[in-house]
Image (cartoon, rainbow, N blue to C red):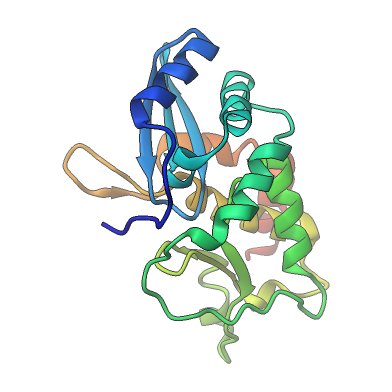
Length: 225
């Protein structure tokens, strides 16, 4: 397993105890090397399951306290966390992957602005994946088969360039971007028999939290995208 070239000031146990004290509930803390999403939390009854990137082991107490408050409230601004992630992102040792030449500015839509607004509104700027328009295909059927994808190997979201059209409403593209950002944020779960579950129940529930979900799905149904 790849590690980070960082000096750590906290242990998993000390962070776990600090989070439990701040929230007054049991915390299952997992330290990860996930570079797609630095911090995720999932309630399991009275227990909160937290996945935290390894870089936070070297964070100052002000950052750790903000993490604890964010986990307690599950909302609100996190300027210290965001600043810390930006500062330490260069220390991450990413998986071996070919360098992605990101193309974000389309003819009609700018993926960068869409990604940033969705990241801020729904993920508190915790998703770190890059985003790009995919490669164009000459065949319509092939072009429209996959609207978006996320690669954990390169930590990259690709959006089908056929969506870069003035006939496609922005809210529909935002849903596709949000869908792929959910993959980056949640990862892939495994079922009891070890099989991969790409869209588990929690994923579908969170997908429906997108404010324009019903409108976007109705538009897709009418237009058969």
